[in-house]
Length: 212
Image 1 (tube, rainbow, N blue to C red):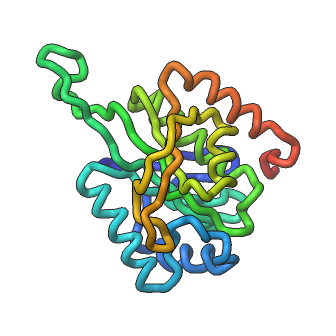
Image 2: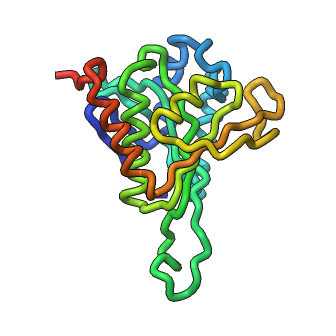
Image 3: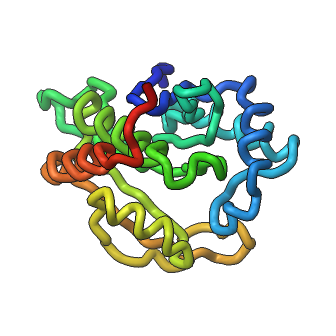
């Protein structure tokens, strides 16, 4: 997977690198209690393994992981990524056949430092990722999952236009090492204009005004 950055008015998504380990540790240390339902590493060893796993996904062309950088102070405030990059088996002669294009993907592994909660960071990160997925890659769908117990995350996905598809029972290993039920959401290409408008409108709120 080719490395690329995505920049907005509040944040920049930089390709994840091993050098982000120390900034991640500082961001996570602001309030580790935030990550009750998220697989966010805590120790130096866990952070190193987390980054290495993400980079392995990028090397295998199945993921594009990022560090979230706040433009106001160039501080790393979290992480997010594309993963489960799907390349469908198009028939010979089809325009997408053999083009190594991405047809669907998931957005996840998103976490923010305490100082970035209730700021424009998450909204703009989703706008940048979804815009790249639908307008550059031209995917047909983007999926998002969250632990069924994580109501805050579910509400955030619904606010940006994610459509609830159902519950995947015992879908993944949860952070507390039990089989996790996941709430599954998706946004289709046909729904992107509406979702894009919701995200854009949300970023216009006075409390999200870009720093001058």
